[in-house]
Length: 221
Image (tube, rainbow, N blue to C red; front, top):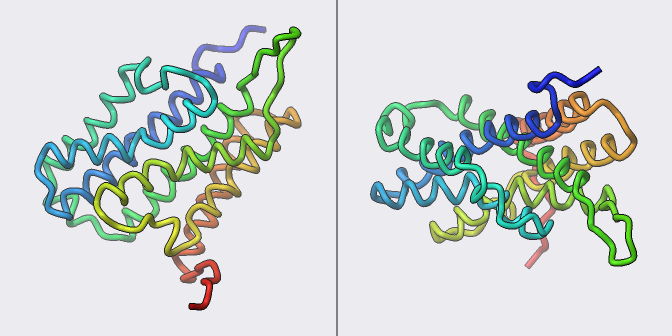
């Protein structure tokens, strides 16, 4: 029986990827606006935050040009998020952290599972014929890069130390969700259930870390 178009893996990944892109664009744009950047700066930071990690992932996979340059929906979503912030920054600024933090955790989870899934799906063609699939560990690492890469670029452009290097269980949450996704897909589990499980693991770990104030141990000076 043919799979309905709305349930096909590529369409599912694209929909999840675009959802994460929009949320990260809003978050990045709001951060840039709060830092006092002008309209152009807000749009640049929104774009970088939303698609930076995905670009790094695609380049490492050899999927060039990256999806953002092949599918106009990605830049439109990224710049659209920035424009929303520009248009209604006062309203965005008034949104309480109790709403913004779960949205950020949700975007992190979406990007982690999409990145891991795309890495698992990727096949390297061998010169001798046939193809080679990526290991679940490398797929999980690429999922993590996809999830945190845009935030790292945002923080560097704004002159700060990246969040993942100084506080909170952020990258660890992304790695956990990406690992669940990679292992589940490599073992042939239901794609939709695996993506949901990976996203849930990442989201729960991130929210628990925020709630309980978890941080990784620091190296004593």
